[in-house]
Structures are given as C-alpha cells and as structure tokens.
View 1: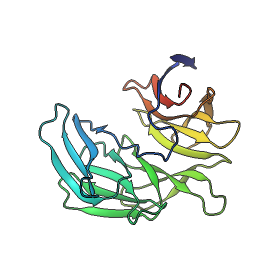
View 2: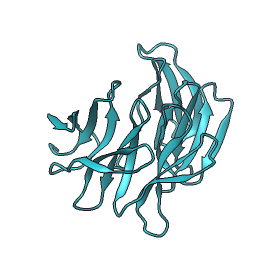
View 3: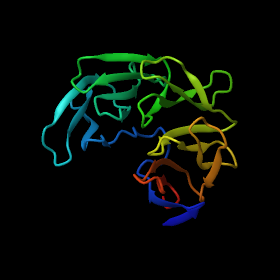
View 4: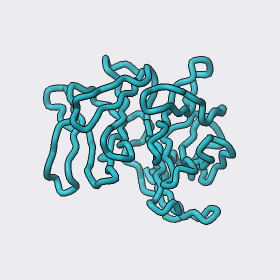
Amino acid sequence: MKFEWRGFTILSQTALCLSLFACSPTGPESSPGGRLAFLGGGSDGNFEILTGRANGSGMTTVIGGLPEFVDLAWSPDATEIVYATNFGGTSKFDLYTVNVRGSVNQALSVDGRMPAWSPDGQRIAFSVTNDESGRFDLYTMTPNGGDIRPLVQSALDKFSVAWSPDGGRIAYESRGGSRDGIYVAWADGSDPTMILGSLNGAVGAPAWSPDGGRIVFESTMHR
C-alpha cells in the first residue's frame, strides 16, 4: 500500500507484533558498513547481542547475559551499539552503549527505550516515561549520557524516533488519542506534523529510505 504526503512516498507493511511492547523491536539492524546486529541466544534464558555479515558469516558476540527484550541501534561509524534493556525483568528499561568488541559497556540513562543515533553521531534520541503524566516523551542526549534535552512533548505517547539520512528531520509514531499516527518534525522537535493517521489500526516504527524521500512503517490495519 502506498500513500503520498508533501513529496514523501509512504509505504506500509503489516506488523508482526500487534502491540508496541508485545515483543522486542530488535533488528536485525544494519550498520553503515553492512554488518548486522541482532538479539540471539536464549536457550539458557540469557540473550546476547550478535553482529555478523548479511550472508550469515563472521558472527561474533558483542555482549551477553541480557534479558529477552532489547532495543538497539548502531552508531554512524559502526564502532558502537546503543541498546535498551530491562535487567531484572521490570517494566523500566535502561540505556547503554557498548563497543563492537564488547570491551567497554557504559550505562547512559536509568530510563529509556527505542534509542536512535543521529547521522552525525552527536545525539541519541530515545523515548522515556514522564513521571508526572505517565506518558512517553522523546528526548535526546549525547553519546556519553549527558546534556539530556526534551525533543517532542505532547499529550500523546511518542515512540520509535527515526532520523532522516541528512539528520535534518525526525519521524516518530504517536499514540493515545484521536491524533494517533506517524509524525515528521525538524531535528529539534519543532513543527511536528502528522503525515499519516491510524488507518483503522496502529501504525508505527517509521524508517527513512536512504535518499530521505520515502518512509516505511508497520501497521496492524490488516490484522
């Protein structure tokens, strides 16, 4: 299915997960250099982040001992991975970065999900629970966990930030009211505009095409 909005072509595919937190959105995620990162293992109850080539060769473990739910994203230079997970099996997720060799694992934030690294490597966007409202808002921080800034705050829950390839815009999903859908805003969070409504089902997980002219998303409209 295809939609047009202000010069963007928006493509849809049916989601495998019927609710946002029903399963982990973990990849595989492709690095700029063509390697994949994904969550694997689990036979003993512990999971690990693995990387390897797209043809299945060169698989290596970056870090193990993780819970079943992990959100991850590559740094633009493919030397680090930012990930969120819930150690202890709680509903609260923490954010970390780990280098691809697994030798340096750094805690960034005590609360955060669905991280996304900006194309210039200077900021990481993520979704975090607002303690006062209980909703999910969007924030950014530096790769070392500092300079945390609000990105998009509204009466709706906001998830799944995706940076445009040039870093000038973001796309994200929003839920919790009549304005559910996929939004596009400038990189500082200003001028948020809904480009696609719910289509009689949840829509989310937007991702940009390499040329910045298309957005692909998941939907439950055909569930």
